[in-house]
Length: 416
Image (cartoon, rainbow, N blue to C red; front, top):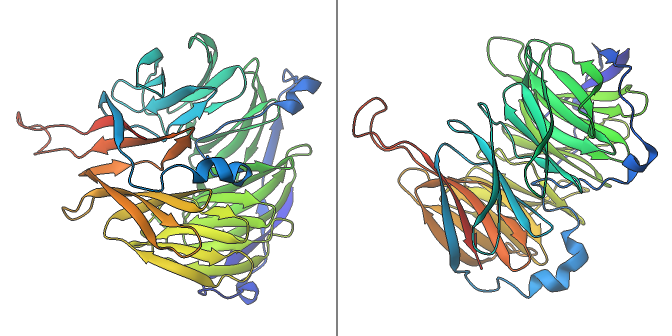
């Protein structure tokens, strides 16, 4: 099947429709006959580490907290390696740790006590996702596993020996995933059984699926691509989940690192810019240069896009692409979220400066408070009840292979 493809330029704060170039892309669909989902599966509510969606619904509750600098409540160490962004659902905090000793852990968010722990196999590329009954984790490069949320007992596990899984999401009764490779795929599994449902083989120059978002039964994906011997192009597309038809595909002039989908459109983080794309047609609406500096997908609340840039946080008008305000920082790779009337963000250590966890006024960008977190790399914060949870990784000390070398270590830090 064929779908239109476009190239999005990067003109700061102005529409870029004149930079769109039409092309053709071919996608190979494979269906698997043993995938059956029941009607009730359409009612599944999926939870991910993206806790920005819908937070305005309880503005009043969120606004009561964190007006002043929070205090550290507890800290838990998870050994050598790195953690992905935590998730809290139904009073339990879940976090996945990558190799060595990869695992998924369920924790009491009030005190850090471990409820259960599952051992993985190897590299864990992303946070897990959850429905009402199960947690779905990538437990190594090529394996997805489903476990019961109450006790961590494994329900099913499926391996894709020739694939490297990079992204995971959920849609109705399906677990969606994306991969890395010469021919990356978008695939789906029956969430109850783990049976394969369908896969789409993406066409060149796509090499790795970097993001998956779902809304109104449409799957939106971002990828980086390679026309030479290194990542040098981005791909963003939309797939109808019922027909598996590619509705449109857009190519960006830099690798696409992730995306967000709202009723207003698709907002894409590339290596150096934030792009707004029409969700129905795939046409470019505007692009704003951020000069790199952040790998986090943009956050969209009401009429504003919040994004990290090179030593800064930006608020961008979602319709016009004009920059409303910019807040300068001295740390690197900011990860913003929005709750109530505040923008919360983390940013990594750089050049000997401390990593930070900070809050800004959502409307003005004015700093409300900031916490130094030491020389660490940090996940985006996750707000739940009256607590804020952050996954952290200390920096390695010394030279690898030397007796004095101290490896990178993983932590969860919780504030109240």
